[in-house]
Length: 260
Image (cartoon, rainbow, N blue to C red):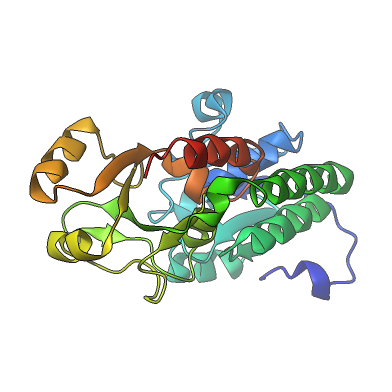
């Protein structure tokens, strides 16, 4: 069954949870759960002690349904973008499944509070979201926030793919004072070096899902001279759970040191 936090009269608190989303696995840990989380994916690298000790049920897009069935969870937490629809629907035939869909900061705060309700950590979630909201509000008063640097955020190399509009990354870019030149395009469009050379002041190379490195900066600087290129922590831009507690500070430092 698909769980809707706001359309249920049940006061059930879930206590055997499988997380199919790395950022939400980290959130469960930071909300204070431990033995309640019985399964995670192979990409749930935070916290490290869970990655080393919790049963892994495949990847975010290669879920091993028998492994989940063996764990007998009472709640599975999935995400519309990160997981495969058909796999999630199959799981929902036998288990309660929460499907999150987060495209901006407001949606992330709502998701954190919703999960807090379901796992019996309402107060902890509210404290977390209040802190995140305050920290992000402070960013808007930085001089760098007003600069609107024309920027592209690359997530993949071959082909070149960027974060477009209607993405969480796009919303996070705003908090760094960055104007995403692909915000009018949906989701994760492909682009070319020629297009980037014409429209961009700044290119951000993400550490995930493609692991861009310093060598890629050097390659691109030769191909599109005159455009500033910088490596950034992809988790800060795309993890929409408790990682947001750290993200505002990261964005503040980034905005103050872009040098564009």
